[in-house]
Image (cartoon, rainbow over the protein chains, first blue to last red):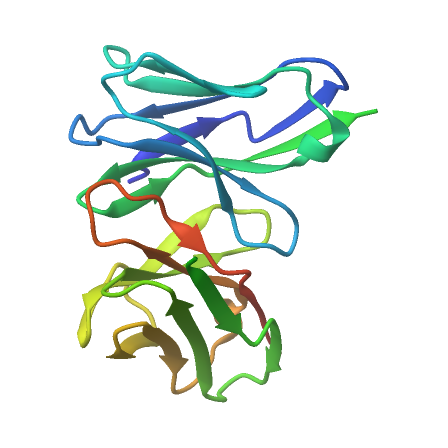
Length: 110
Length: 113
């Protein structure tokens, strides 16, 4: 059973556009929601994270929107750049166990 | 600062051979340690996690095993590799405190031939 469902599987965005990746969960015990960025051949790196008592968190061009009642959260990348091309994973945490989404491969066209 | 080391970076092994992947963490004590596997173009599958020396929890049945002989050392092993064991293996750590972030190593690309 997949604890966190992520969509889309792949995404193509023009340079300067907005990239949006969505995740949904069922377990209301999750209490921490990070996003990770992974470049080919490398391990995932923490990008930004949010707690469920906050509806939005912004760090530079990256924003997490969190909807607790709908049990959904999303990553928005503003002014997307070719250097943002990577695979993005959402995750949900409960008792120090991380449950990852299936990943979204983002390709930003120059 | 904390760092995580994982080796080797790539490994090609024949079917039926043993496996030993090692991971060490520096700059922290009593971390939670994790082994993940990532199949090509796929998500992250949690294999094992450890909250202390000698304490190993297995998430999926398989022919792999893990051990934690020292506080900051985590080892992934197999007695006999299968073709299906091919993948990208990632070690990760997090501080033993509430909602700490997970930090990944750079992974080992294992190809079983």
